[in-house]
Each structure stands twice: as C-alpha cells, then as structure tokens.
Length: 114
Ligand code: HEC
Image (tube, rainbow, N blue to C red; front, top):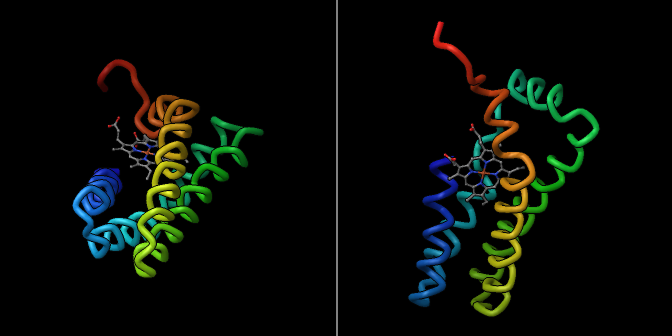
C-alpha cells in the first residue's frame, strides 16, 4: 500500500501546485494498483463473510474515482478533480476504519513468534 500512499501524495501535490500531469500520474497509479493475490482474497473473504461485498465495494469505488480523477486532470478540469479526490479519500479512510485492522490481522496473524 506504500505505492497508494505515494500516489495519493502526488495527486494532492499536483492539485496544490496546479500540476495536472502530476495529478494524472498519481490517479493512474491508484487506478492500476496491483490486486491482492487470490489466496489472500480467500483469507479476507473467510474473515469478512457477508461483509465481503461491502469491502469490495469500497475498493471499486476508490478505483472508479481514481479513473475519474485522471480523466478530469487530462481534461484540465481542476474543480472536478478536487471533488473526486475528496470522495476518493473518504473511500480510502472509510475502508480503513471499517476493515483495515481486521484484514491486517488475518493477513499477518498476531500471536507468539514461532
Ligand atoms: C477496500 C478497502 C481499502 C481501501 C479502499 C483502501 N485501503 Fe488502504 N488498506 C486496507 C487494508 C486492509 C490495509 C492493511 C493491509 C495490510 O496490513 O496488509 C490497508 C493499508 C494501507 C496502508 C498501510 C497503513 C499501515 O497501517 O501501515 C496505506 C498507506 C494505505 N492502505 C493507503 C491507502 C490509500 C491511499 C487508499 C486510497 C487511495 C487506500 N489505502 C484504500 C484497505 C483498503
């Protein structure tokens, strides 16, 4: 997720300095970020059960907004890019509040060292 963080900073920087190419680069990075491997998806699905669709929904929402931010930046529409950036951050943090710790725990179980 380090890549996502760097991309988020690129978008913010680009918006703050009117560098729409930088905005586009960061948005493209988020839109194309690597998916988690299938065996990890299974672990997450087992933990989240019926909540898995909501988790995936967060992921898709953030992905779609990243695509839209890139398109707005290409079109030179800074206002649209800013509005969508705010929505995207809500999506990042919404998923983190609801799921980050739970999912991190199944991916790297806590407990005594073996
Ligand atoms: C669908 C849910 C979801 C969305 C959406 C999401 N994240 Fe995450 N994020 C996670 C989970 C789960 C972890 C913990 C993963 C792990 O520990 O391997 C995480 C971890 C992180 C971390 C590491 C944090 C730490 O505690 O070390 C960063 C940075 C991060 N995400 C950035 C982002 C950014 C930026 C976005 C939006 C562009 C985003 N995430 C969107 C679920 C999500």
